[in-house]
Amino acid sequence: MAANPIKTIVLVLTGAPRADRVVPPSGHTATLTTLTAAAMAFLAVFALALSLATGRLADRWAGALAETATVRIAAPADQMAAQTQKVLDVLGTTPGVTSARALGGDEIKALLEPWLGPDLPVDALPLPQLVEVTEAADGFDAQGLQLRLKAEAPGATLDDHMRWRRPLIASAERIRFLGLLSLALIGGASAAMITLATQAALAANGQVVRTLRLIGARDSYIARAFVRRFTLRTLLGALAGTLAGMAAVALLPPAADEGGFLTGLGFAGLQWAWPLGIPAVAAAVAFLSTRAAAFRSLRSVR
Amino acid sequence: MIEFHDVSLGYAGKELLSGVTLKLAPGSFHFLTGPSGAGKTSLIKLCYGDLAASAGRIELFGEDLANMARDDIARLRRRIGIVHQDCQFLDHLPLDENVALPMRVAGLETDEQALYELLAWVGLSGRATALPPSLSGGERQRAALARAVINSPDIILADEPTGNIDWDMSLRLLRLLTELNRMGKTVLMATHDLNLIRAAKSQVSARVLRIQGGTVQLAGADL
Image (tube, rainbow over all chains, first blue to last red; front, side, top):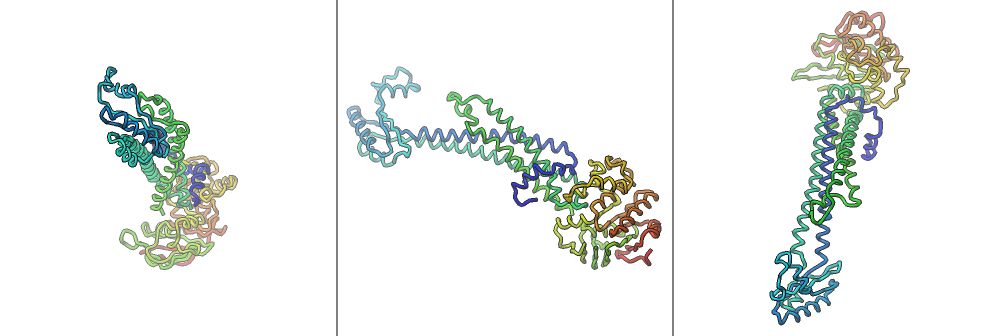
């Protein structure tokens, strides 16, 4: 075979279609290979969709929560206004803070309403004052700001949302990793399946292989017949499975806040091009595993 | 063409061939005879590298078979035509494609006219599209011979090619082999049929090698 792997793959797929006629039609094995490749590609589309969706989710959570912070001020009623002003002054001179705004009583009431109901007597309760902070893209030095706030307004506590962000982002990253791991496992299982199918086909065609060696066929010629057959079958099956998987993903309900994460499973924009790489990767896996299995088996025939 | 230097072959713990030294000169015709199980097929397999000698050296076209890579063995086999008693064909391909197979594996274009002339030469022009399982024993042997010579090899190795066919067909096959020898091909034909060897007397100047007790001897005078 040619040394250049790309050239070899192209040669196998496009060249000498009569070469694989030397191998008898193996309907059963070939059909199983095609069906398995289709099923694997279908699963791969979903694993890819899961990875990409969790990636988007992690980015969204990280982005949305990273741009805001909250300062909570718990102080006696007569000191509240003074401490709030000091906090606003500190925030106004903090690099990385683009704006700071004390929430009004109605806004605090609206925040608490889902938990405490609409009849909340905000004025009668000793609620803390909340200051909404908007960060610049580079963010601010949270530790330094916390120290300055403590010095100027002892009742102020900075919440930069890290304790919420960390587990959410970690979960999303972990799901994305599991999606990628699934893709790797699907690839590995496909390679194992194709290797077994190739070995079975070579064993079933022992007489053909011996005859071909007898008349002067090189290993590469014999292997090419099997490689071409299994690679094309895998490509065909993977293409069908990928298209079916993409159609199934497209038919999922559209992303909606009410549906949470599940309705966001799928591809967005140019991400729809990603699954189109699955048949090519499947064909490459089939090519490499068939070739390795064929050469290994052929070594037992002189 | 083929040289054996003190070659031994062990099989299942015993020595089948021992200290065999022989030389097949270009254009020669040799019969290889001996009782069943004497090692005729093994010796022929040694000639084209299907078996490896346990001792000694075998040279094929001047190259040591023991040090040859698989691709080099394949390359040299294209210069050898092999006819087996149990002809090995690809049963799913028609006869003409089977006969043309050595051309295909060598990456050569098959000359359709030459192919059909060859099939006519072995008397199979009417069976070109038949599948191997439908051929008679004699047809299979002649087809195997056609396949063996389509690449115009330098050596023909025939292992009991007349083992499964009747006398008339055996004579016909012998005539084809002697014709090839007259064209300059080196022929080594294994047979246990002494009548066939005697029948060849009028057609070709051949030598007879006899395997007995693991050694190869020249069997008396030339025919």
